[in-house]
Length: 454
Image (cartoon, rainbow, N blue to C red; front, side):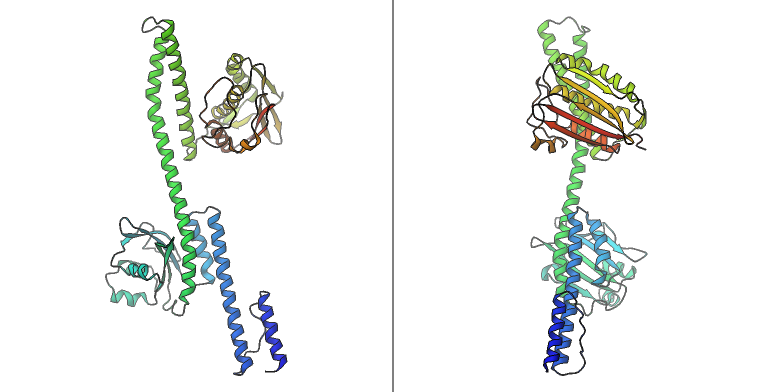
């Protein structure tokens, strides 16, 4: 082989290194040059296919890392793998080890009629899927009609054929060295998978196994979280009535309807009454949180006169501030627009912020409620001159059941749910809330609400 041709092959290899997998080569002839040229061309095509595989898998991995569920991942797989493999149908089935079943959980298909859909299950024992698990190798069937003739008892094969599929590639899904399920590629053509390099799809299946297992675990966590919210809601609802009954009897005693009581008895009953209020407040917070988490927070939107709203609230809460010798100041613009909100929920938000400000403030300080119009929205702030929140703790104040190191100045109790509920209510109104705090100087919570949330 002369040097010029050798240089041409070297240049072609350098092109491939730079990402051009199809450099110009003369591959005719049976001499050494032709053989090397064909080999380099085949290597280039192989490299290109491997790169496509890795890019596809990287894309799917990125999707699952974004928190997508199993069905979302399968949507992405169904669209993405067409460059690597021919198929008209993809299905995922997971193994139920307790019941010895394999259960279909996701299906995507070009077929008009789907016979094997989510929830379809079949025993693993004695099936061809058991062999796939034992050998840890994919199974290829290139003529499903012929396979069905020789295995007439295979219900799943019959159903797939009725969908119009004629070839199938079944790969085991293995996670943490344990079989977790299967991914099925099916095609309407015969012999679709006849010339496949099985080891490529074994590699793909191994990587997909981890992705699908993570997705399944995310879905289980979501289901457990929903179950937790339902339990909290039921428990809180069932507790509310008996505690309300106890509180009503306490009020009867305190008001003398059930006979005279002495001062010691009155003191005990007042303590019981306050604890009933604490429990009812906790129950209401749990019910609110449960409704919000389950997506059942309903807003009754109406037009709200903010001037009337703030002055009404100030008169309601003034006595609580005075008990701690705290001045409650109202600073609002004279021309505030009406906003469309759920007035009861916004009252709940304001009350939580103001009572918190009073709770964490020392006597002889001021809590200021301010409001102003700002670029198509209304900005509402609650500022105190209290202890302030350490900078490293601000990030957790809106998380449920979370508390900071700052303690109430009057020994008041907290559930750790109030601000989490506040944030969710504001977000449900398409608004936002932020906090600015300096230790030793005070804290300001600022709410921004659009004038019209509809």
